Image (cartoon, rainbow, N blue to C red; front, side, top):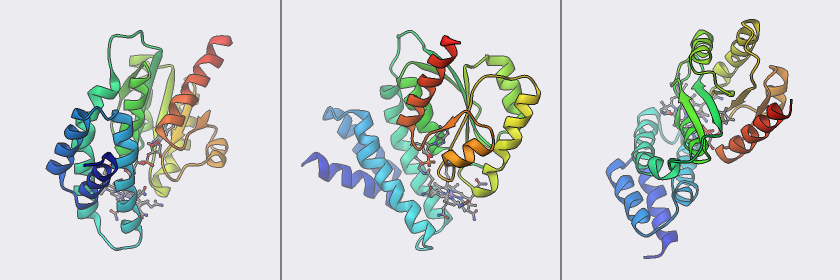
Length: 216
Ligand code: B12
């Protein structure tokens, strides 16, 4: 069977929320030496994209989205160790979390995996994170960058609260923001040090911010 057909089958498994099938297809593609990044880009993300559009158009409802998310996560669990790699010198530490009131974590987890795959250490605070949680995470782990994720227009506004709070507590490291509703204009308005539309761009942004910090 052609790889393209298998990508379509994987996307379909995510759309239908078949987590066992999604896991099996992912393992099969790995066995066929397909790079994990391609499995993510060509199978999982297109599947989740369809889910998002159907949810937006009221063709499916929350339970279906949840089982699709579970299928996506079953596959990501297999891809993650392969994408993260090991043994090489770490470039820096990123502290990531989804902001208060928001439980969406698939995108943040992909950013985390891509960063780790590119030699960064990631401290993941999880979802529904308050400003205080980011402050204590920063104090404990001394990250080089903090990344805030939000998927809801109602929770993205809390990003400004977090940034203002961290700055008031003398946390001066770069803070970046991301998630589907976030754009450059919003990032500028709330005083973030940058934003990225996807995980690959997030890695580029963080690498750029790190090299700027080293220069100063
Ligand atoms: C899956 C999903 C869910 C799942 C989440 C499961 C999970 N564990 O994450 C569940 C079912 C729980 C859910 C719940 C809800 N959801 Co929902 N959900 C989605 C859906 C379909 C996909 C999101 C996703 O995972 N996308 C795939 C990932 C890979 O993309 P991403 O998150 O954008 O991440 C990428 C970039 O944004 C970026 N990025 C992400 N984070 C960061 C961070 C940094 C620092 C950087 C630099 C970059 C970056 O890189 C990522 C990787 O490339 C979206 C639709 C959509 N198209 O976005 C709706 C969506 C986000 N949900 C929506 C809604 C309304 C809800 C609910 C309020 C529904 C309800 N009535 O209860 C609840 C809210 C729960 C809560 N309090 O958070 C709306 C939001 C509308 C709005 N404008 O606010 C959306 C847009 C659907 C819609 N069109 O109506 N949801």
